[in-house]
Length: 204
Image (cartoon, rainbow, N blue to C red; front, side, top):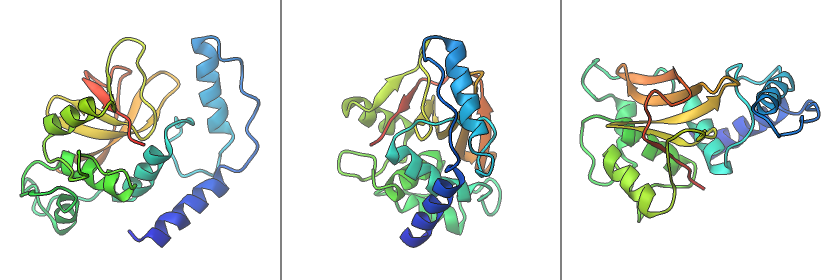
């Protein structure tokens, strides 16, 4: 994806989100937070986003989402091979990478595309453990736990798997875009705990 097409996509999203948002309710209770999310959805009927998307997230996180939304459906060729011409491009964001499980390659690629490469030297990581360890040492890791909710664009980390949070529903459910999920880039929905996520990584 070229920089020009990224800027064009950002302009489309800004245009779609241009209608006036309703006044935000007082943010004093869980209910008002849910109401604010629902209000944000109602304010952007033309946006090409899942219906549960609310606001929030960092600029880097939004840039990552802009990069990965068009990747949904990219699949291994042949299935089960951990490879395809496009997956080979994801691997290029990680120094010393080889054919293998590619969820961390995918998020390393997305972060590089967004201008916030992961790793101490921006080298990317092919290992989920190595990526989360780097995030912890860099102060970018957020351990999962009661009351912890991710933002759009955060990386969501499980034991040996990683994805990108696309949105958080009013009920706390977490919608993601994940590489190497059923042999392709897939959208998934998880419960408010992220179905046992160990933590999140917030870049930018």
